[in-house]
Amino acid sequence: MSSFIEWGALGQVLVVGLLVGAGIPALFALGLRLLAGTTTEGGAPVAGPTPESDEADAARRGPVAIARPTPARLAGAVACLGVVVGAIAFGLVFLVSGGH
Image (cartoon, rainbow, N blue to C red; front, side):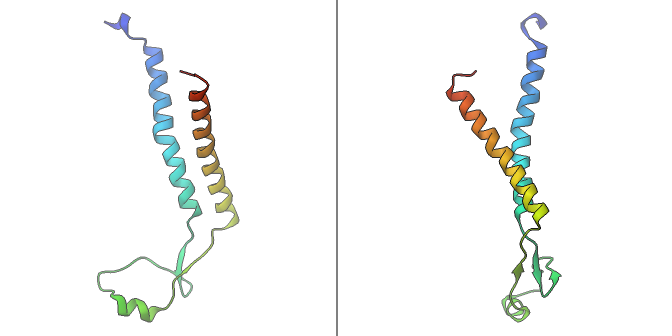
């Protein structure tokens, strides 16, 4: 039975499938996370809504400010999202050119 299976080719397909199937979405998620600013309220980070909080309590606290990402985070986000766009473009060009 093993004469019908090319183990080297199967391993290559597995590795590339894991890289493309899990790596590209992970880079996209990392890029979005780096791009997201931090939420602050009066200079202190906001942990999120609590079960005890209501709309009146939220109105008393005042506006919520979303800080811009730092230049390092912005550069990392651009790099991650650039790799994702490049991988998508490469895949499309590869398929359109008749690659198998």
